[in-house]
Length: 326
Image 1 (cartoon, one colour):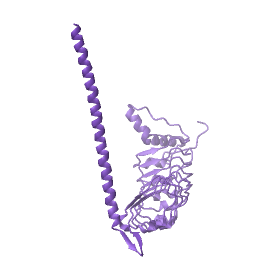
Image 2 (cartoon, rainbow, N blue to C red):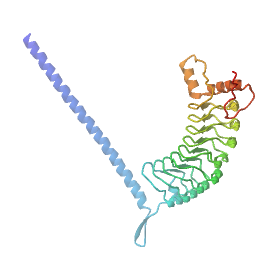
Image 3 (cartoon, rainbow, N blue to C red):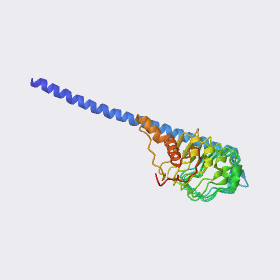
Image 4 (cartoon, helix red, strand yellow):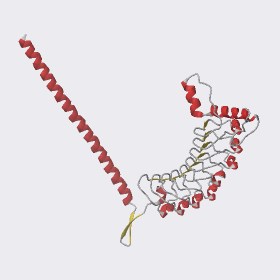
């Protein structure tokens, strides 16, 4: 019995020793594999750099004893520079006539040069999260512009009226700035479809807001809007309307006719009426009501019309007239 125990003990010790060795060998193989991969990656990077340098070398010419690098403008289609602390857009930006996308978001840019207007092929101008204080009228010369983003510059308070000449502009982000009114230029953009003016200082919407007839998405959260014009009911293409965190006391009855509206949010407004939706049969239905708010809007309008005793009226943002004898 003693000999058997010794054999078993020896076998276990040998097994453990081999497992440790195999583990170490596997680790060494893995390290070697990773080293080869890194080496191959570095080699590929070197090849790419050399290829790029060779391409640039072809463009170096000698003029008067000076080596000059010439880059053809049509080769630059897109610029993206993020988080580089860039403080100024160079004036020579206007030389890149075939630039399609200029994305200089999240920098420290304080102004936009008028030479930007020379970029007639530009389709996207993205300048959010900078320190821009005003928008130059020369942007109106960027006739191909489809997307303009100036969000979170925190100082912009108006747009030049010339921007209404941008007939292709469909997407504008102006959130978190200092706008106190919707700029008239926006009301004259025939193809504007998406507008974000959340986080500004808007107190009301213009009666002519329905001139933005192609608008389907309108973000107005975190403003100071206290009423909505009756003309908002004429915006037949509007499908998303966010009005959370404002000062609304009522929901206009006209909005019950906005049949294309799919998402609406009136959260965190001091609405005069307390409306509670009937309980839902399941969690999914409850989440649908909570998220889209359409049922709440229609229920509120219905209760509001009952209080005023006028089911046909199309009230504005004024609070409903309450009967003191009720």
